[in-house]
Image (cartoon, rainbow, N blue to C red; front, side):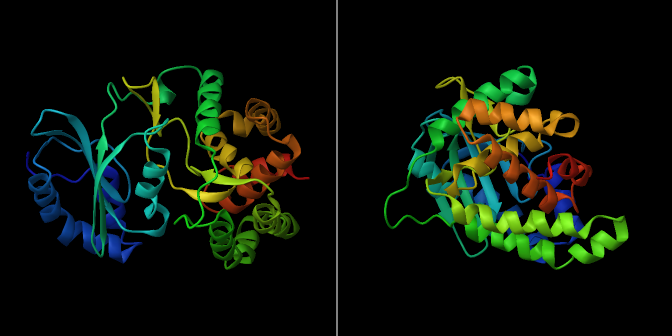
Length: 295
């Protein structure tokens, strides 16, 4: 393989030191593990993709048989813990195929099907057409998992992020002059909505136009799912967070996605409002969007 190199976003995340485990893993484990995995799976590994992700090292590779694959070596953290389980469940139906997996205390490495040409959906067509493709992918992914499945619940994920938000909501409201009542209403909905779903399915939770790639086996394939079981309406929100239209006319965008996905438009607006409140401290402009969507 080529000399080991750290992609930009992973290097930046490790240097920031906000996750000491990631910083230590990137410095000590990752540089020796990549060549070890290349040997284990008999791969010729090329330069990593840029700018890459913040918690994984991902590069194109070729097997001894000449097959085009992707090597993804990730730091173990809760959000990515069940990616391989989800790929096995979907079994290549709208998603990249999983060829093999390696797991250790601090690492989860995946050998994946490579998408060729691998162009992002966001760079391939106008945003309204992206809406249609994303809606079609979500409809395919939404299935009920079997009894005894390993996937965490959307409720548990929302409770975690709600606690993180509540721990600093008052300080953020005072610092930025935000309406505390609006923040309380948003986070209350964020906790309530996943508990009131009557049709839970396996969700991707992170489907947006940079996680859908052009391929040969199918026109588009999903990568990097973060599977949870819960309310399918939630799954429509992540795409909208990657659209400029969220800032200009969030209600119209929400109603459009509800129509494409046959979802209750009122419920989707509530989810979008709740998520905008929860994301507001870290995501510029989301408080202003929440004001527009407030019930």
